[in-house]
Image (cartoon, rainbow, N blue to C red; front, side, top):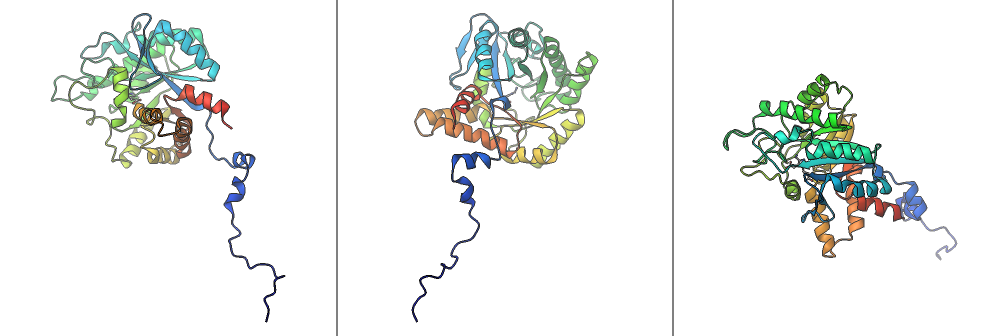
Amino acid sequence: MFEDVTAPPARIVSPHRPRRTRRTAALRTFVRETTLSVADLIHPLFIVDGMGVHKPIETMPGHSQLSVDQLAKEIIECTALGVRSILLFGIPTQKDMTGTGAWDANGPVPRAIREIKRLAPDMLIIADVCLCEYTAHGHCGVVRDESGGVINDETIPLLGRSAVCYAEAGADIVAPSAMMDGQVAAIRDALDDAGFLDTPILSYAAKHASAFYGPFRGAAESTPSFGDRRAYQMDPANAREAMREVQLDVEEGADMLMVKPAGSALDIIYQVRTNFPHLLVAYQVSGEYAMLKAAAERGWLDEPRAALESLLAIRRAGADRIITYYVKEAARWLSTAG
Ligand code: PBG
């Protein structure tokens, strides 16, 4: 007749309470699946000819073109922050039709490699292998006329020469980014012939023709003077084609793989991770950095949180290592993060 007030309440909610593991910071740390460490981040540097050059790159706040004599300060700072790997791009003063500066032993990259090895012998140095910074027209390979496009088979031996030049200077890894067919095989052959059997290749295996490279092209002075890169870089619409590109690079002897860009290709990162056992690097490119910076500058985003979250998402998608322009800032934020 009366309600039995002593009876236990009927179970009105599910016994599944995922919030249990979010209650305290200690629990949240305990159940965290993906971690971010400065040791996983690769720091890009833009090296120019000359002396005393430290020229800020307008579209990439916090980054500058540096001449080799300016490297000491940068490398000491990186070492103190726990940065372990660096990616080098060279911007020569002289550019020509075939990009001969790309295999000049006294070009900015070989000189920077020797200097960094002298300053910090344990710093891992990755040399980007491409012709776009070295050609007068800004394309990633040999071009005979504006209508003919980049000539694949004349370009790949030049990429091979460049890779050997960087290996001779002491690069630990070479990273071809030109998106020429057969470039990994050509570079492997050239390295082996020159005695660099143990120099690994990190292949930019799946690289989209992305609008997000815009700020980099200003930094590297490599904007094509005519046309665009869509006849060699991949259509951002394609993911299965990305798997084919990766498969071919693996067959050609790539030791490690890269997906680029990162934030707009998380599905590709995930698929490469699932289908290939190789170490996987993702490139959070200049446009991704510029977007975060611009929003943060206006106070529209909490920069440390947004930047670290974007890096974490790239790791969660499956990237082992990340090339990002946030390395030094991330190192600082990670060391103070709770
Ligand atoms: C090509 C190369 C590019 C980037 C890295 N290697 C530019 C391009 O393909 O046009 C872009 C990196 C970035 O945007 O941060 N050598």
